[in-house]
Image 1 (cartoon, helix red, strand yellow):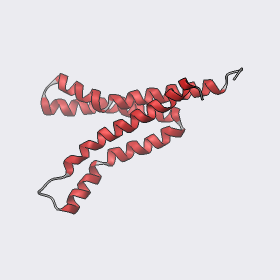
Image 2 (cartoon, one colour):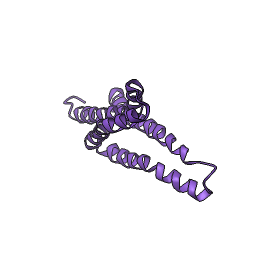
Image 3 (tube, rainbow, N blue to C red):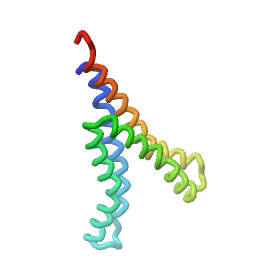
Image 4 (cartoon, rainbow, N blue to C red):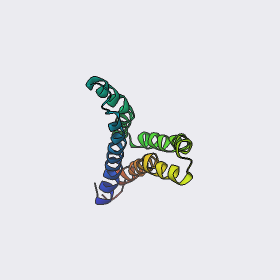
Length: 131
């Protein structure tokens, strides 16, 4: 693999891992002094369900870049209106809601685009006539 292909290969994977870790941080709000230890662990695991789904999707995208890229784009773009409307109802600020979209859902849409680019770059580099 050339350096260019190598960068296109690793960039979506590393960005996706970072985005999943960021999303996972929100599960920490499950810990509360009012709950017992086991209730806290249960709530924490429930809050991590989106991260588990994203990890499963990353595993799929790791080997099937095109399909994974499309799914990440669908998740990123498809959840944006839902997340925006939910946050807008809570804070009544368009700019704050847009900022939340930019930090939560748009990175997954970008990861999806990068997986698709990586798919085509790797496919193209395998079919070069003079390699």
